[in-house]
Image (cartoon, rainbow, N blue to C red):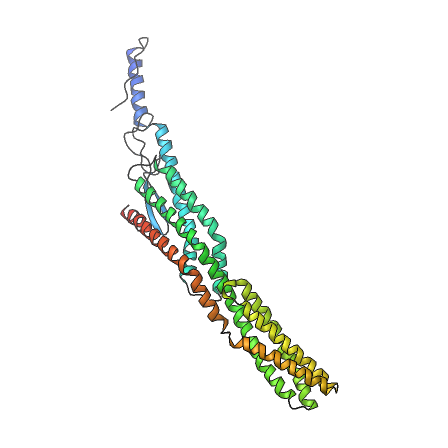
Length: 345
């Protein structure tokens, strides 16, 4: 329906009234009055359709039709659609981190995983903040969206909240992956050094037992080589033990300490023999043998550290992983609803 004519001014002539009437009709037809329908995109008014990309899916949202709505209602609708875009954008941003976290949790434990897990752990608080902000923006948007847009806002909000719950369960798993993966590399290197040192130390004993100057000098040289390897191996084992205390790698550090005691006593033995003090050398040799037996007894109880790490890791993540997988399943279900709505639109 057309807007009512203005009251006629009795002081106007008939011709003036006709001219005023023509002006009002021209004003209405050019958009000065209420529009009879939505304007076309590019015609100076709001576009009838706005498209967003969210998590790789095209999400269709229809902008408010001016029609008979007042300016305040149009402004509320536009603000609500802005909040909808904001929420969807934050959801998309957070998903980059969510996917990385899920890959760490579901991946194979390797030494290379340490930095990936650490980075995901650092980025997780920001992703949680984005997801909570997304859920809030979508909740604010809902009231002033059209009824056909509200299910999209609801589904996106549910998806954001499900992701928050999922990430809240991921913390212990990321920490376990970071720690265990960080221990794998140095422990493997350290164990290799310690086992190599043990072989060199055995050869040094054989050379000493020749009871010749050349043999004892060679024993002295080999003992120094073995000691250097044990020192470096101990350093790496201590690093691994600090990275993943749950694996009990402190025992490997104790083993290295026992080996160092035995090697130091062997060094004294060689020095005494080469100095011509055979009696002292024999006494020291007995002490060295005793220390070496103690070290060997502990060493025989130790498996490769990777086995200790794997066992401790499995025990540590069993319960947290069950909780995470339940939250992940809920998030996947929420995503299915969101995907169905985006495809339908």
